[in-house]
Image (cartoon, rainbow, N blue to C red; front, side, top):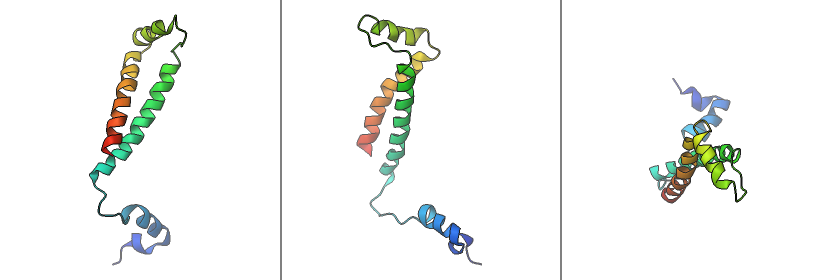
Length: 97
């Protein structure tokens, strides 16, 4: 019995694109850090948007807005630390990729 994923016209396209993808032998598991780069980038964008909603760039109130984020916003401290450490994680994944 032949495999249907290799005979059916639509499934053959999916099979050739995702399952039996011809890749060079020099691609190793280190290339998986590319997907982590994408995850880090999405986290950076989302946390940056949430932080920008509460941040004030005026020189007299900038520090007060950061303390407001950490103290008064629900899980603001977590969002701030995820954004700060996510930048470091992004560059580590970029280096390993």
